Every structure is written in structure tokens, then in C-alpha cells.
Amino acid sequence: MGDYHQVTKQSLDDANTITTIAGTNFAGSASNMLNTPYGIFVDNNFNLYVADCGNNRVQFFLFGESEGTTVAGSEAAISFPLSCPTAVTVDGADYLFIVDSGNNRIIKSSAEGFQCVIGCSTAYGSAADQLASPWTLAFDHQGSIFVADTNNGRLQKFDIATNSCGESNHI
Image 1: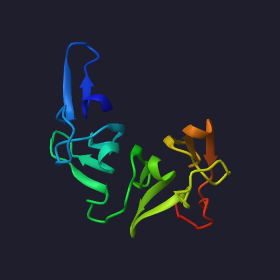
Image 2: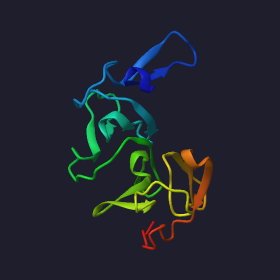
Image 3: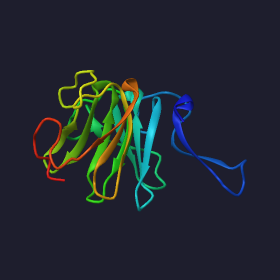
């Protein structure tokens, strides 16, 4: 996906049918362009969230639209600096979670904007509350977050009733 700066869909019925969903095949920062996209999330309405690593942002594309909106990053309505986001997901309460790989942390949206929930010091490390280039995340049915902590070679599980900074995150 990141090699061609776009998100594509391939038909299961016809391997030759490939449709571009987001991006233009060229790196760029315009609203219809991506630069090294990694993770995606498709919501129940088929809207698309893209972790746009090279532009340090998360782009949101309404279903069927080619122009995206920056929902996280320095160009977003509520600015929150990112460094190479690699994964994005939305939980059952419609909170957006982002793997901010370059800052070694996991952030989430809230009514007040964004907040850190894991790796809040942004320091690269191997302590239990630190991450080293996290890559992706997933939730279990109890709401725990599993993080692929790439450069530490481990999968970490976090109970997010409180975050690694000791602050309640009200999830």
C-alpha cells in the first residue's frame, strides 16, 4: 500500500479489477494525496481512515469521495503533532486511536481533542510503560489494547482503565 501512495481495493471475483480508493499514485500532501500510507480503518458506513505516515497525519475519506480531510496531525482542525502514524482504528464508542510510531505512543480522540493513552513520555524504550516504534494495535472484547511494539520485539497488552501515565482516560 505505501509503495504507491494510494489505497486500492481488489475485487475477490475478478483479480484484474483494482480500484483506487484514496491517493493518486504520487506522493503529496494535498487533500486527495497520500505519502507512504500504512494503516487503514473502514467504518460501518464504508468511510476510510488512513494513517498517512509520510505526511504525519490521519486522513478521513467519506465513502466515494477522493478528497480527504485531515482529522489528526498539525493540519487538523484540532492540531495534534504526529510522527509517522502507522495504524488507526475506531472503537465501539467512536473514539479514534492512532499508533504514533515516530513518537512511540498511542493516542486517542476525546471531546477535548487528543490525548496520549500509552507511551506518554514519547521516549523510545523497553520499560513496561514505553514503546519502541509501535506498528499496529487491536482491541479484545474486554477493551484491552494489544500493541505490536516492533523494535522491542514484543506484543504488549494494556488495560486502559488508566493509561501508562497514571491518568484516567475514561474509555
